[in-house]
Length: 403
Image 1 (spheres, helix red, strand yellow):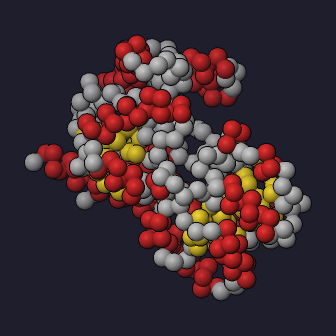
Image 2 (tube, rainbow, N blue to C red; image 1 turned 180 degrees about the vertical axis):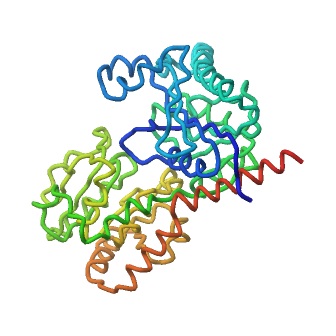
Image 3 (cartoon, rainbow, N blue to C red; image 1 turned 90 degrees about the vertical axis):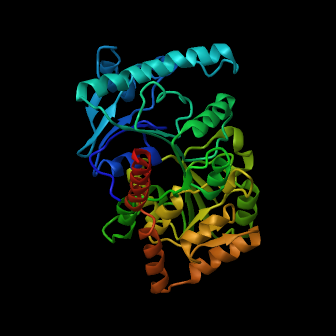
């Protein structure tokens, strides 16, 4: 069942012009292929406004902060529009309780009023509302009365800032949504206990972008020019989910290899030795458009996450980005559900020794059939396919509600 000609409002968890890939925005772009989609940019706070004064993001958004503006700008594809909201109050520092919830209602009204203005401007009488992991604002849809209210649960909640109020807010969102979609089976099992109408649709990758790494015309990123081969690489945030002891043991056992890490580093989670180890290279955070050139320079790509309750809920985008670039992948066995989607062509390791052995095996392999199998797996896990699956699910739910 194809979802067509619907108006869809998506409150995302990221800025539409942010530096990183976003599940929220990728799904918005996919749904916009057959529907009119309004992506509600993650609202900035007055604290953000002051701290980021003069930044490109603030300069661009300032003209839409007036309450008389509709905040509408065209997206990067047809049928996709962006809604910029006025700034909201910074209230997360408050303890959970009546004051926080009262001020949250004011913030939610600011966002809701902007959506209502667009609904009136465009003459929209029927629409779908998706909260894509923006659990900070659980009651936006309440007064809007959408035809279908959906919560898209993208990740586990692990950051103290999010958990402070987010646990209560997310529980409320899950319980009252018409439909809940989760990106990992563990999240699905958790939310299914709260809302029986919960489904599992995993994350994916931008195959068109990652496959640029396959082109012989693409030069390897210059940041790697002084780093010797073989290069074992990782892209993404370096934070709590990392199994640092695994990395330490593997790096010490493989002095002949260079371990490269590119992404945002969260200092409170990173041990001192990590930045001092001779064959570990932290090269910082690179723009998303640079990722193919960087990954092209990797001999093996890795995902060294801890195996714990939180990691069981992670379905990482980078897995399929690596595969889409044609790279062999070695991962810790943090989420057993991933094997179902990689058909035995990714090594999931339960020890540092197994991790080292898998890297060696990947470096020794020159089987062209293996590379083709990797690319086939990546092609099965694209945003286009995930968008179709979500659209079909929404279409089915609409039909059920209309009966």
